Image (cartoon, one colour):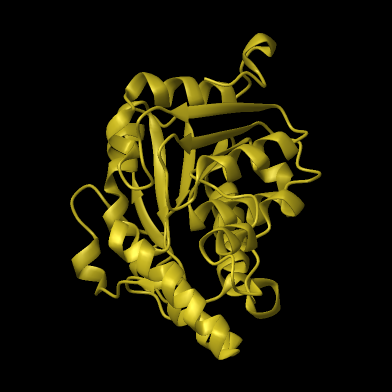
Length: 271
């Protein structure tokens, strides 16, 4: 995974040098295609149905305390994120692993606009079907998708967790390619600072201490820009792709508890 992310930024640089924004999608997104039968399992079911597939859903063994929607990173497909469902269903959450257009069994175009608009529809449908509370998680690229989709309909979202996020995609491209005029060529912006400028629901920003793909400094910039109730979680010793191994179930309980209305004394305090 790490080498794939390095290739991602290298190829973005090549695309920008070529001066062809249409090529960007081939270098920014790494979808893995798969048949529906290959992504569903006894634990993960097609959601909302096999005939209208938008992702995978796992239900807890007890009545659900609420719903969590997960928007994954730029590589693979939703079925590769089963670990979210495993830990959160044990804590009583219904989990939807949202799938993007062009990923897994889904068709459709790639790009910021189609992914964000599709995510909005996923959020809307989940809220209509299951009501509140509804939490949204976005990881890396998925943090950009989740931030934009949540900001456009804050009344439907009860809390937002952003894992290894950036402030703006352009910042990451400049960091890796200081010698390129990235602002001229980058079509997709994923500007989380702008998208969340007026967002007022609880937000947790989780950054990996040793992340060399999306360095922690960019997550901190995003965190400092937020006016919403917020909490910064620093995952010590973790990098961009192994952070999940550095946290436990207590971490998830604390995060979801805060997003559902954590006490005032825990808000805006980094941990």
